[in-house]
Length: 420
Image 1: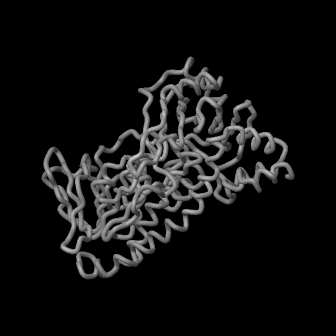
Image 2: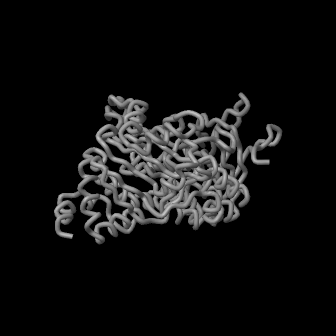
Image 3: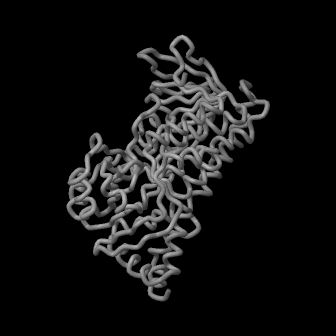
């Protein structure tokens, strides 16, 4: 049974993970496979929906392979060999890569069941309320509301993997910026007749969605994920922020009107459910990464890329970093208060060092975000890539994280566009 019964709620565990998305489930599986007693809790039961583009780019494939779950995911996912980049003037370039699309409801279920299979206990629905602290202020568990009643779980370590909504970060004393880095709106459309026509993960830049982008991703069973994302959607004001003049539904409608395949998809297909919006937390900013006894991971730590809005792979990667940091130092400390205090600094330092190693990639993607602010850069890149196999190879390298996205739109990079 995936959800603990009210009579058998856990009172203690070695590692408590709050949040059962890609980051939380990845950490839970990794730790449980190492023999650690893990409870991972979520405020939503298994099978929850999550607003996401659902794209699995190579970094997600790598993380899933490490977890031993790639084959299970790919058995259900819609594979694709290209990202189709479409500029404001209609130019197009297909960038090769190892890609797939799987709705988050299904992906999260595979990850969740994979963690349970490894021995982790799943608790839901459980709403996180506050961190529990010892006399020295070290986090030693959490308080939840379950079936309307308070319930506490003691733990040696807590991993917070609660996504982009800042409420849990605030409750844990880790939130530094309440406003998101961006916002997105997506819907699912069933249109089997178009399944053979849209095979690439299409990303569209045009003036109606500036400073963002629109997308159409082919999903399994003749359905499509269609949406828009807007970066820099909030003005920062002492960490509180103010929403800019952004109407996501109006931007979505403008995208559909502007891009003929989107217009046809919405006209001829069947909208499954309703359009849903969600915040994005990007660039490893907006939250403290650690405090004694607690590590923040996934989108709660800002694991999403600002340029593309891709976050699944990096969420899992940061979850694995948190698990590895704990495993590297926990020997002999289970339930030992003095021992846990002694390893706090090395665990936190290893985890923070792992995130700092990722930071340059995020900084470069933030530079690449200029394409969203200035869509004419997309036209320029596409025009040159159509004429330059070397540039197309570099763009493919961005997908595979072997090339620098920021270099493509730096002054030096733009100069090179005319020389390659």
